[in-house]
Structure formats: structure tokens, C-alpha cells
Length: 510
Image (cartoon, rainbow, N blue to C red; front, side, top):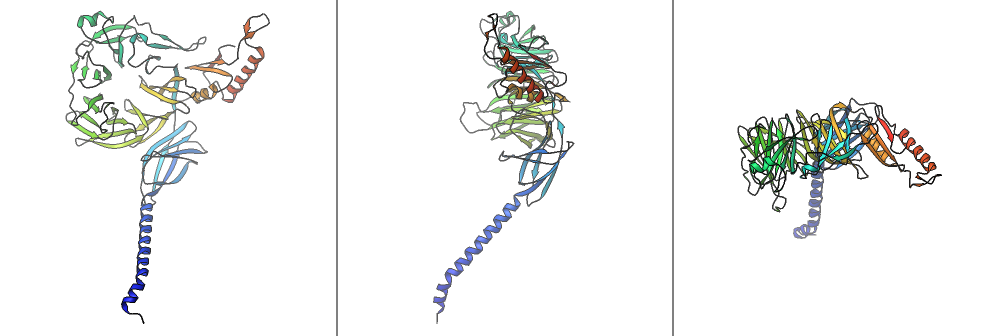
């Protein structure tokens, strides 16, 4: 017969095993509960589209991972808990909304009103890094380049494709610091160096001067801005009827309310954080927002500070390295490497209300806001995170965006490395039957060397091969090759339904 000590010793492994099993069960139950707490359903309904299939793109904002699914006008998906950017697409229509999903297998429902992409027009080929659309004509130049080297993108005609030529600018000189559209017309801020022409600048002993320009960029007036530091470079901003000169580095900002007056130093609050310099600013409704950040060569910890100067000064420090800041309707928009953060001023503080991934710049067009992303230009209502892509780039890649009087211009690069400029008209739905994307497909044809488009004119440069002697001994293209290439081009045009109504196609060599 076993005594108590012996029984306890023999039973000890069983107790340990039971405890281990119970522990494992508890871990499994807790793990299951946590998983359940992190999962939910999203029901998506595309409203206003056509019968047929839709493509749905769901982007997890935290991981930036995207899943794409196809389905009818309504689908239901199991997702993780968190914020999602959801877009429904069908042909040239789409809808977008930011949604927060809950947990415990709850269901979040979202309706996406479908809208048609907006009108876009080809306004030039091979634009430089900086550009302006003035009275419907595109001008481009190297950012910080010589004013005398601005190019005009000459409009195409029924007999001539678009081309670029240097603007005849009265041999004016100076490095371009910025250009802006004002109520007095287009102005350019340039920085002169020793030896540059410009008697007004020499007499005033200044290095910064405003050129007031006609629509063809002829200089009509020269305004020395002697208040600016001759050893600094400035950016140019037009807001609320005034020109704002922003230093590129440490220094004071200035404001010019009247071209006949003098620039005055702006009240510029200092950041609370040390080691920050002014990166950019914006002004609206007698308020100014300043963005301070680290110099590119500063390898210290990341961080930036946003300051809003209004009846009271609001400071907002962030670990994010914001690069751009601007007023967006009644909100403040800040862009960093992750995308767009939207802030509201609430009780003397900046509070983040919205985030959109992959945004590279923001265009505030009156009460409308366009978030320019890597793959599309998104018209967005910042109050509810709802909108649609005014233009999806397709196989084009984005270079830059710039506001115009009635919309904006995008510069893009196609798969062959050719740059184009597209003017986007937010007020009008696209009627070109996606001409831009069809042109991309057409340019891939082996029968063509190039395709040039400007507004309603499409010029084709066929690939007829090498020149060969004809019957008279003159160099010409082989007739059989020409017939075959022309036939191949016509087949491509028929397949792509080109030209759409209102467009004219011309063969350069035919």
C-alpha cells in the first residue's frame, strides 16, 4: 500500500500536465478572442454605375497593402480592424471613401457614388521641371533656371504638330525663383547676379526683381524688391491678393500687397523646437501657416513643426518629416513621405482628422481639394473622406502638378520615357473616350516611331524604315513597306476606335 508521500510524488506529473493543458486552452481562447476582436466585414455598394462587373480596391492605411477584387454592384469582404481606403472602378467611372472597420465580426456599410473622370487635354510634349499654363498655352522651364531660357509649347495646327521654342523675352536675365498668376497677370520673381542686365535693379542695388508679364511672357514692368536679402533665394506665393516671398532657409518672409508699394516683413513666429528652419508657408483669410523642418543634411532625429498664425498662434510638433503645408478649404493639409495628413484647428490646437496614403501634393481649387497621388488625382471632401479620381494615370507615371486658372496641369511620363502635359478641367466630365490611354497603346505599335497630340490634333510619325533609291535614283521609302505600315496603322486605329469625335489624325509622311 502506497503512503501519502509516494502517492503525491507519482501524481505530480499529472497535475503539471493538466495545468499545461489548461494554460494552452486559455492561450488559445484568448488568441481566438483577440483574432475575433480584430476582424470585421465591410459591405461596399457602388451607386450610379452601369450593370456589370466592378473592380474594388481596398487599401489598409496602416500597412499600405492593397487587395483588389471583382464583383457586382455590391460586395462583402472580411478585413482587419482599422482604416481603409476603398475605391470602386468601372470603365471611366469610380468612387472613393475612407472607412473605419470595427471588430468582433461587425459589419461596416459604405456606399460609393460613382463619378466619371474629368476632361483632360494634351497641351504640350516634353515639358521641363517647372511650368505654367497661361491663356491656354504651356510654358516650361528648369526650376531655378534662366528666365531667358523659358520655352513655349507652340500649339499644333492643321498643318503643324506642336513643338517647343524659346520665348523671345527682350533678352531679360535672372534666375527664376518662382512664377505666379495674380489679378494683375503673370509675375515672375528672378534673382540677378553681377553682370545681369536691368538698369532698375542696378540703380536700386538689389538682386531680386519682379517681372510683370504679358500672356506671351514679354516683360512689361520691372519692380525691384529691395527688401529681400540679396544673399538668399526666395520662393513666390500668391494668396489673398498679395505676393508672399518665402526664404529658402533661415530668414524672414515678406509680403507685397500692391505692386506699386513696398514689401513688408511678415510676422513670423519662431518654432518651439530647436534646429528647425522654415521650409514653406501658405496664407488664407488673414491667416498664415508655416512649416519648419530639418535641413536635408541634418542627420538628427526626424521631426517638424507646423505653426498657424491667426488671432492666436497654434504650434503643432510632429515626429513626421512634413515637406509641404497649405490651407485646404477650412483645413490644413500637410504632406510627408506617407501621404496627406489633414488637420482642423480646434480649441487652439491642431487635431488630425484624416489621412490619405500615397499623396505627393495637394491642390486647393477654391472650395475644392485635389489630392495628387502616385496613381491618380483624387477630388476629396475632407469632411467625410469621400470623393473620386478625376483622372487615373494608367501606364503614365506622375512627375508634377500645378494649379491653373480653372483647374490644373499634370506632367506625366509614358512607358517609353516620353513626357507629356495634360490640362485637367474639374468642371467637365471627359468626352474623349479615354484618348490619353488609347494614345499610349497606339504609341507601342511597331508601325510608329512617335505619336504627338495637342488638343484636337493627333500627328503620327510612321516607321517606314530606311530610305532606299527609287526608280529615278532619289532616296525614298520603299513603297511596299509604306503600304504595309500604313495598313498596320489603320488596323491599330480601327481597333482603338480612333480618332474620337472632334479629333483629327494626320500622318507626318503620307
